[in-house]
Length: 273
Image 1 (cartoon, helix red, strand yellow):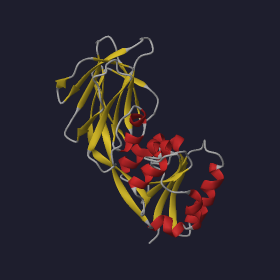
Image 2 (cartoon, one colour):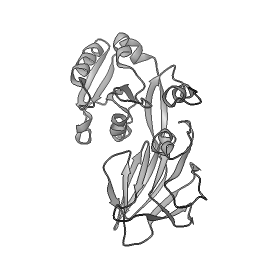
Image 3 (cartoon, helix red, strand yellow):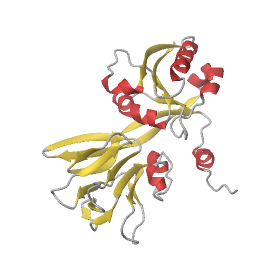
Image 4 (tube, rainbow, N blue to C red):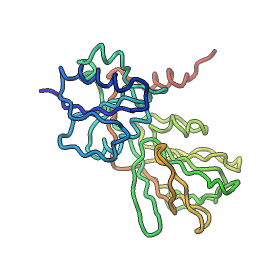
């Protein structure tokens, strides 16, 4: 029985339309294509037939972009890399074209934790999921911002800094890493609290468990938090609560994938010269 395939592509990548069409024609021998659509239109997509898998042509940001759609319908995502790093887009286009059957069959599915981010604004609470991170940045009106942090209800000191980054294990190789955070293997049930340019030397990133919850609010009720979820456009909220979501994101990877090898190759870990 043929697999049902959905295809999403980043329309801003060079030659992507031609390459998407060529791939689709190759896939037709082995599968039924349910849809072909730009990631720019994903927020407005409704599907009548649910695919068995979604193929995304783009960079890691394209996978982040389609994550809510994938989680909503519980469909694994298989990313073909047209970006730079390829932490989430684990397949090479040229190799895929040479072996379409292997591309469809020789995979494993990695279940990735998500952050649950409850955003409070006035009397409304809206919950979002993040695959990489939630970033809270200071208002540019202020030279420095002070954030009130609580972990499991315990209030830490009000912390002056440029911002707060809360990352999943998947996101540990993204913004958090550039702030000196640890790399956490993706199947770990933990997440990271990190600060941007804190005005204190008594600080280190914190790794929290699946049972922990972080509350972040500004130090004044007259201010709001400016936040971005997985690198999407900024918006303002009164405060947020963050913990690990009960939902998972299914990322399809080559069957031979090794996370230590990915760290070694992509980040040059422990390489000299």
